[in-house]
Amino acid sequence: MSSQQPSAGAAELSRLLLRAADGDAAAFQIFYDRTSAKLFGVILRILPERQEAEDVLQEVFVTVWRKAATFDPARASPITWAATIARNRAIDRLRARPARPMAPVEDALGLADDGPAPDAGLVASQEARRLAQALAQLEPRHAAAIRACYFEGVTYDELAAREQVPVGTLKSWVRRGLMRMRGHLEGGEA
Image (cartoon, rainbow, N blue to C red; front, side, top):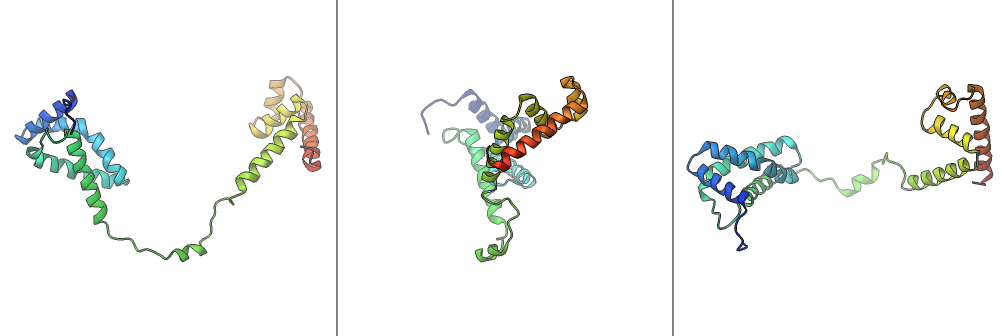
């Protein structure tokens, strides 16, 4: 341990533990309030199931209450001492679990993978790039109308009002733009 003086927080926690060792329930409650979140975090790293971690936290504080008299501030800080108890209790709980049956790795060969194929992301990004290039070939108003209608979910009526044009004109922009995009995409120009 380092030769540094304990911090004010550690000194206060040490005093609370020593008072708890003398049976001071109020001091123990304050110690609990100041350390339970930290100790719960230690336990959750080992036992991610919340209910089980809460059970272990309760066991930890029962142990802290019973063993408070064994705490030695010269050997460890109070939070380190309590965190060690928490860690050990969580590991004990983990080890006490019944062993799960292991299946041979060969059994996994027959399992279907419902996820996308490994190259799906590459294909999708290439298609998105081609689509963006085809949109870039259009007149800006036509490209903006297609983006708004197909990518942003804006209705023809809403977009016509926003652009201050008749709905029929807007539909023509979109139709002509889509036809030009198809030509770019099919012709490989994009």
